[in-house]
Length: 115
Image 1: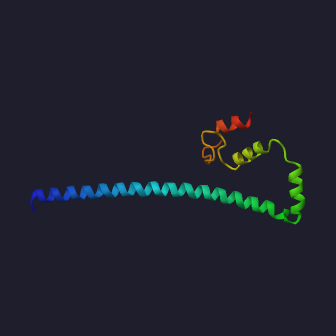
Image 2: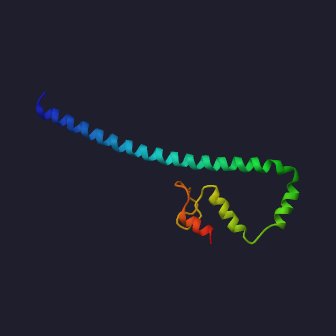
Image 3: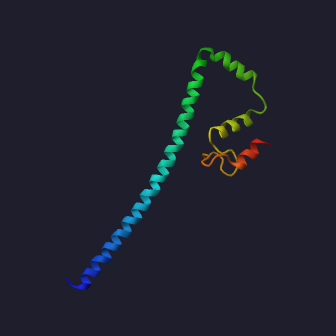
């Protein structure tokens, strides 16, 4: 084999490795987004299971519970809903509203709740 042929083969191999590296990077980003989506769905699933578990014993007195909720509605119901969302792990601040809190408490959300 002559030197030019070997150099050509090495250049082609380098090009293929570069393409594979780009493809690997794309797969890595897809895996990261799938892991994040899986985490969000797991949290949502856990919250739904907790809610189902809490609501199951109340099925016998559904009418009484409904009447009680209607009579105890307060003006701060929206605030209570936002506080519940925050406790379930979601942002309620205007910067990240609806996204999942990943790094503990958010100062913006906390300042909104403390108003």
